[in-house]
Image (cartoon, rainbow, N blue to C red; front, side, top):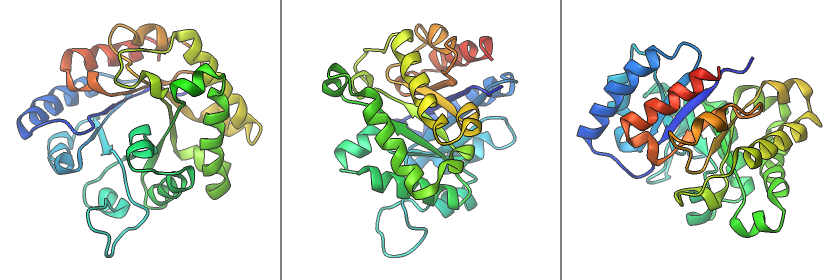
Length: 254
């Protein structure tokens, strides 16, 4: 049985005051979510504050990105070893479409970040997903497979025993559009079937989250699908009532 995950990705949002309010709330909610892993990936400036507020609770935390390097002359980058050893992060998101698009991160760069995160004790959260044009052309699974295969080529299939995959159709991120439960389930199933061609054990165990405008209204039906193991939540994770409702939806399907 795969334990559902509800993970917030705050992106470039928040203040010290809002972080304090949200983490105090979410720490309490996480403590009551016995069968769900709850986590927040915050902007780098706030990770230390999140650690301070969440320590001692069941709420986990992570970063929105990490670098392939651990130390050295790499101004402005996020060291995976620092994230793990200095801030007790559990997760690092890699390959988000905004990183791929705005920062020209290739599948190979994302795979290297995945490896660096895992090598330094973090659980990588690999984001994959297609553009609207690729969706319309029926290339969804082709895109997802290529993004996963880059990691397998570098790290091997067993790397996914300690990783999470987040399917986020780019056309649904921040647009208010959400893949229907049927579309999302079919894609998640296709991803799992692809992984099975390498290892049935890994495919059955890996948690695949849905992202892309998942909110309190859409979460219950999305999370009821057989191959959807929770959500990577953007805007709704900045609203305490909405994120709490999404966690409740995950609990109901745990």
